[in-house]
Image (cartoon, rainbow, N blue to C red; front, side, top):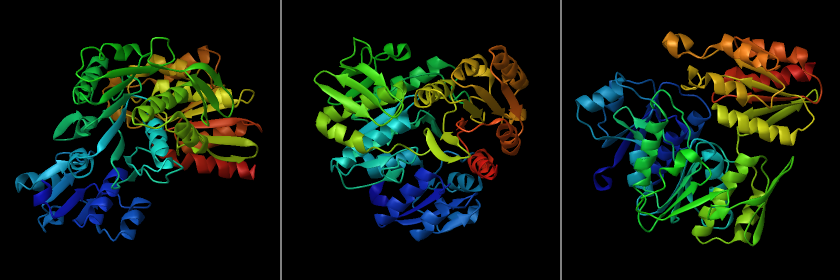
Length: 464
């Protein structure tokens, strides 16, 4: 593929990973073009600064220059005019994960971080450990680490650190993205049911992870959460070494003497005590995976701790967006009940005496459905009040599959928790600001923009 390609066209170029890959291809002197339906900052600015032209909207004539390779983004479906033209004219095409595999990962030492929860934090922390210690890694992360200020970078270094998503690759490749990433070391943080739009049940997700595990070479390593029962059956009979990490005594890399404080966490492994500028047990597990991986790759405990000392977190992961009127507004990407529960547990440690509001937008393809109808109630256990936004695109789901907001409100109220179901960000801002007091904490859970609710809250609170 490499020898035959001189020009590359990206369909859906304004995705964060697509744009980063396009810029990296141009730096390697390929002719790059791209198109997207939604062309706006920051990605339009990012591409313009690199003099990559973006065609606004999808059209067959965008491929009139007959590129040697068409990269088709994950969000592109059959019926897209450029996808249809690529198929009809028999142009060479691939997915973004395939492009990454052949042009950026092959020949490097690939460290792939997977799991239902904590992938972005773990990958960010691991990339910072390597970067802080001068190893100049390439990385691709599904978020923006504050230390690195970008989610993707492609270098000439030997290491490639990548967040391995189990979501499907493209409309023409329904395998999980992570099967393309040539893992030398693979981390599996945990495994739960998610992505109800493409997986039927937990067994289907376990099957996909088992396919990923089969790709680890005999001179590689599988690092797995040994405390997770959903992973246990996948760790026997593999053709690569397996090492378990966790809090339980049976783990080869075990954390003990765990201390969770309002601004940091502390844990020990044999012969060394680690301090972490992140709060909560889930983050300790994330850090433990990083310790295990980095030590396997030759870094010392002191080198790892030095990076931990300077790690500044990730945007949209328990990120304080501002304080106004004495109220702290927190942004979190959590959209699975376990992620919501663990974030609220961590916030309860960080703000032990404050009233904590949880504001949740059910917009993922799983939380729009009723698969977590019961689990969502317990997920909000550490919140003092809950507000849920109107379920996104609910009318597009069959009635028997939809999350039932009225039942969710009843169940939360039956637990003694004030709860409200409101149509949009403006209604939520109006409701919440009438009932807030100085010192309260609002955590907004959403994997989207949520109507700019964070800024609206801070602006209204600043005027109060």
